[in-house]
Length: 193
Image (cartoon, rainbow, N blue to C red; front, side, top):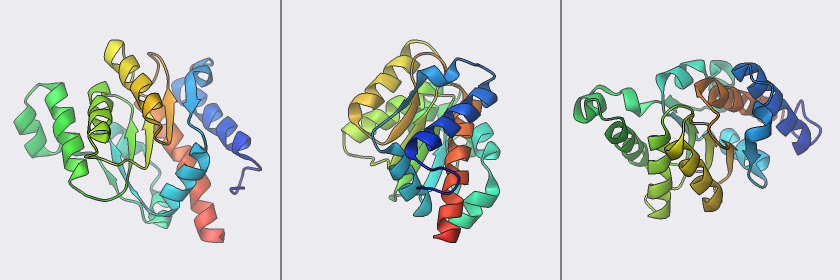
């Protein structure tokens, strides 16, 4: 399997363990959903060097640089671009829409890491249904009530390779932890493979 893991089950157990540490919530692992074959899809996407798009600068700055460099991965957070902030003002929903549209304009395979703005996940879902966006992997852990819960449930239905914190739990620390665990698993397979 992947270095450091004998099986997909071990990889999933490691992701859960690290997410529990990051959130300091012993029950967090119970809300994690892993789509079928997501470990294989994750390793494939990361080893292919697909860019990572984060919904917050906090997630982007928390990603481990060494495995990203080894894998040739670039990370982006368009929600903090000056022109997007200027255009959206204080409207978080507009900001999320503009950031996802900017990511789609890259016109290349993308991995999304969402831990804060459920509006971002809602827009990713909408653009995916409209066939305007084709995410290769989504790590979805936006925290919140109605929109966060609904956007995560919709993602499950779309069948995109994903790791999702179902329900209201989530956050940037959880999303970054899940991504960092996947990066640490993917980097050795690229170097030793």
